[in-house]
Length: 199
Length: 428
Image (cartoon, rainbow over all chains, first blue to last red; front, side, top):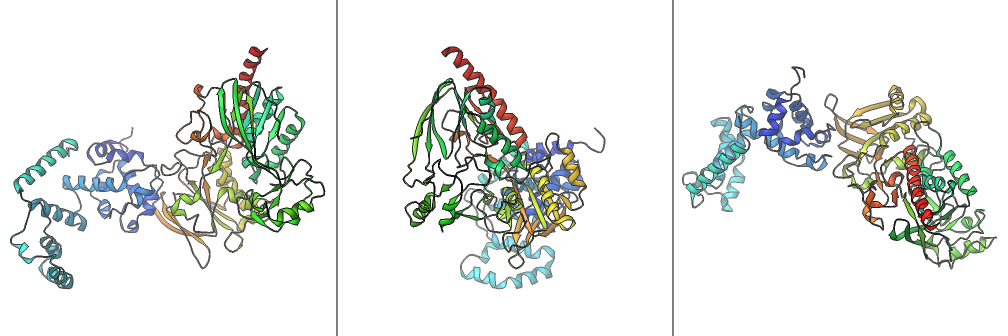
């Protein structure tokens, strides 16, 4: 085998990426790329990502923002003639890149996903106030104020409907057994790391 | 009452298409008695509905004519039309088959003069032309129909139209009192040659066959090109009758798809390559064919045919499984959306007409055959010893082109002959 073509990255994906073992099944028909509603907006459509994996383009794939653009509409999954779980593979690749720490910095989906997870993992409940403020103030204080002002009516509406409690900012509610919850997450992470180790 | 003389040395052939006819003829010409059962009112099957064969681009009429002449000359073949096998019991060398014969309402006095057809007003969907047009309710199935005998559509029985047809017949050939019959007879071996049917294109939701008039199937396209077809051989699109000069062919419409048919239907690539010739024949350099494909499978020795089509400047190949089709309501054009995987270019290309190269599925899936049978996951009959003396032939056993279907039929005839020869040795 030539130096330029090695399938070591494909093997890495098969071993370490969620649903990665499906990548070799792609027959490059392109129906996923054509079916993607976000298609024109990302650098590499799924079937191109799969080909890049097989061609060993590790850096290009893992640092790409393509898999972060997936909105989980499942159009590709229902149309794939080989029943590849494309959506899940995209999320698997994104997650793998994130765990390796080479996901594109500042990618909005990655930012939100990280924020959401940390938010949830803290108390076992999603604190919506903190979460939305975290998104509003992502690009600095003044932009945050602008964002918050723009969303004012929604916020007030939620407040009135008792869907948003301002005191949550200081005393967030959570699950009853918080330490048990954290122990559970820790164990899950251990199992996951054993099943799909990073290195 | 239909009398059938059959013994354990008789071979039953189910299906009167090219495979069934071939198997029946090969066995009969070896001196075996054969009963040939056909569901439709005439023999010939799907082959009679083709405009041309690949790779030589000759007309199926020719091969059909030869087979029909062989059939007419051979007293050993008993043909039952409008007949379906409903039950098979017994074992190798001693089967008993039950056959249901539907009423044709026309007896053997018919001279195919056509007076009955002229007398009726009711029209029914033209099955021979894949329901693209209509025929009178008293009709000859197609020009080369064997037997050359009209059929009265059951929908007009009991109406004044049926009486009019009867009155118009000078030969006393119309018998409106004809009833369904069930006959039972013996056979030593059975050749199951029920052929294929086009995959139901409406199930492929993104291509909109059920919604868009200008999305048709490859079998319908054959009828458009045929002089006996609904357009008299002109390639006109269904929505407005405009000449369809810019035609897209979508490959693997149903085939090689776990959501539809999991097998490769083998013939569709060659069929579309062949059909680009129809476009060129009709419109010369003005015609334009675009083939959207995953990979072209010009099976066996057909690579040179593929290369010839590749050299044709009016034919374009786009390596892409089309994601979706949308018909423009104003122009009637169908816009195809997808990504060309050679370079990952996104396209949205309008075409006058879109032809779906639909896959083959068995007419009767293995599980629906009224006997214990081993079939593959797509329902095609396997060559398995557990099938004893029930042999699949032609497209009931595999997706095959005409050439290979005939080879398969001859092979199954040979197997059946061996069985009845064994029976003959025992019976003496």
